[in-house]
Image 1 (cartoon, rainbow, N blue to C red):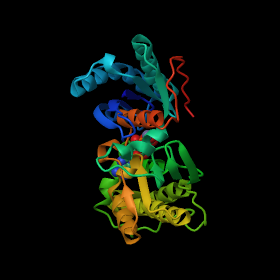
Image 2: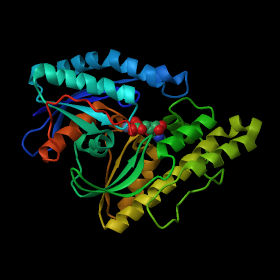
Image 3: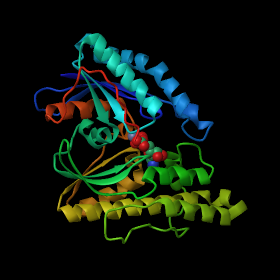
Length: 336
Ligand code: KG4
Ligand code: ZN
């Protein structure tokens, strides 16, 4: 079963081919990605209309690249998968529209995939995929969740953010420090030159006794600190960045460990854009090694949005009998 996957929920256009044989973990045959980050940077964030138009421009050339790379043809595709949501409505409609048009032209079924399930299953694209069950820490620009994962489609939310997502905390704090969009990777890089103990920033809900998160207060604390610094901000920026990263990472770390203890599981899967953060990886690796817990991450370049995770999630859902691809071609996107 050859699955073509299309991702267009936000500011990356991703196309990929994943092949599934029997019940073995599906294999990535090729993937291509175009990031719109440079285009949106001048606006300090994603401009939805520009995003949609760029997805339209990129998606078919990317598909051609993927077929050439895999040595396959459009006619070889068995299922066309696309991101159904969440995301920007107009951007989602591009991927859904193209997927349904291809499906209709080929007479092949289509399957809409939940973007977060794509992230969640993205570690299965690596050479050493995890085994079920596991605890998942899903940390992206829009979501922060701890999940108990017993199998494909068997997900239980253990805790989640009550306000901002971890990626949002990175991005908003970075913006306050005058760093480019999206701020997460910039703040992480700047942190390497800073002193993480320089500023005392709050660790919201660290001792709440549950597995929920809150990052809105941290952003406010960073803003207050930045204002207090005034002219000094430029000189102390690396210290403020490092202190901010330390606060976010500590909360993610402690809550992940608490989730592992609460479920008694010895496997942790980290996925989503913030999963690319090296400080988070270092600290999780160290804490989990001490407890005999295996940690799985997606490959670094597959942490942020991509088509491979969408094709993978579709292939795994179909394999597990958790979804049926359809020839109704009614592309109903779900922005929220
Ligand atoms: O998963 P993703 O690509 O998109 C969503 O589904 O939201 O995640 C993007 C988020 C952004 O907030 C970005 O700043 C953050 O992931 N991010 C990072 C790093 N790389 C990406 N945050 C911290 N450190 C990084 N190295
Ligand atoms: Zn994402």
